[in-house]
Length: 374
Image (cartoon, rainbow, N blue to C red; front, side, top):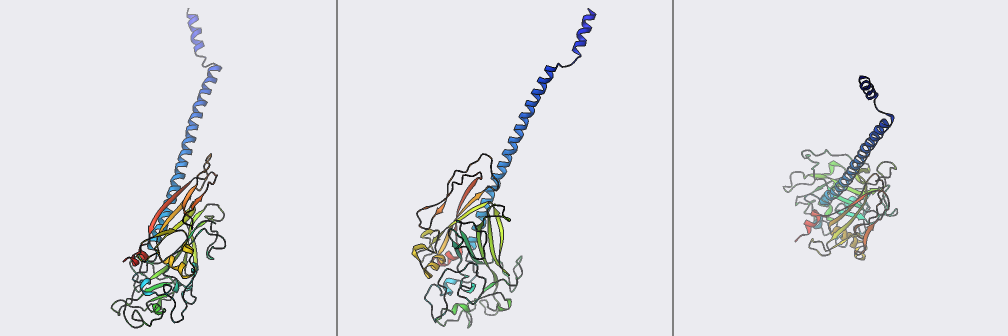
């Protein structure tokens, strides 16, 4: 009996059989495969969530940048162009040069030509609808065809001189600054000859700091002056080089002309509709994507459309910067209406692996609109 027990104990100490070992290895591999699949799926989900969050954040940020600058459009401190500038609201007097066409957004000259900044700084907003190579301003490059561009003109909220405001930048050489007179004296606001050039005595627009001699209400102290901003927002085909990532960019007037910077990547399209006051009460009567042609306008009438643009609808189409495996974008995105005011301004379907989200906002242009309210 002891012999049989010893044999049985010896058999038990021999370990697993080959079949048992293979079964164990197989079960282990199944468990590892399951864990690996869960890990890969979790990682893909996390990457997709991060991609979506980045896309949403980019779209919101781009909308916020455009809205913020639009709200400041036409800010001219104490200067009121609608009271003080006769051109182009009235026919020219004294044979002086008067701006009668849509100005060049890339203009850098302060004085001289009719289209110089002296004659255009008060056109608070301007745009080009559905850009093409032939309508692309000369200071821009790599602009995505079919998108809109937005031009904003305004003064800085910071005082540059004669004493710079707290936290404000010092005067930058070669950059235009604007100073409005508040002094009712000869050579300033009291200049009333009946000529449409009288307005030139009401302010100084110059790149030379020694030119700022206009005075405050007391006609003793020198009035503040501020930097003039001219900013052009557009969508570029690439962020860096030829990476193929559509990007919201901004060209800004500086000491050596316009300098372009990237703002938000993954922005594939921007479109605008402008709220135009067809009357004189400062309230929007109609929205149109192209005031340069609204109502069949020509010459000065087109300028008036832009000067009476008191709000803007902003449409932003944000695209993921990388593709999603298995995704096909079959959606159509409505970004407002075309210039006829009836046809939907639709884009897509793109039928690619990029995900897209459309953002819409409406912004009131407080500075020009507020001046026209009764």
